[in-house]
Image (cartoon, rainbow, N blue to C red; front, side, top):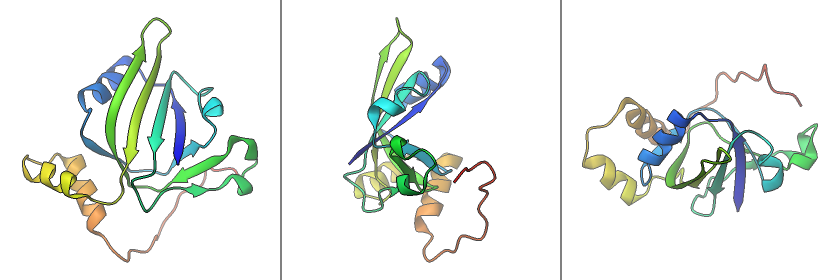
Amino acid sequence: MEVYRGATLDSEIIACYEEAIGTYKCWYRFSSTSKNRHKAETFGNTLFIMDLTKTKAGGFDISSYSCYPHEEEVLLPAGTEFKIITVQSDAENNKHRIYLTIINDLDNEYLSDLSQKQLSAEDARAVANALKINQKLTWLDISSTKL
């Protein structure tokens, strides 16, 4: 399955994604995405295009609980890990597409990549989060969530 997320990113953040092509990163918060590409394209200047076929975890289709079911919302869990595949930019129109593969299952390529370099704080958190098992959610801030 493919899901989409629209966002407004400045040129510095776009450059960070371009420099990180081929690397693994993690979003530490819940992320709202959509199965409806057209709807996601209406949010901001950047479209994240996410391939969920390589993960067992996937996302949670919450469209039946939403006030906006036509948005076909899929919620990605906090700590979602992904590989940055490519970045396509249309500078004339200030539009960008960032292709990601959601992994959420540590694979050998990721572990090999991590073993060959010094870990950043972000990478260390991603590994620590991936190693946690049977953890209970003890706090969840949904103050800005509308159901």
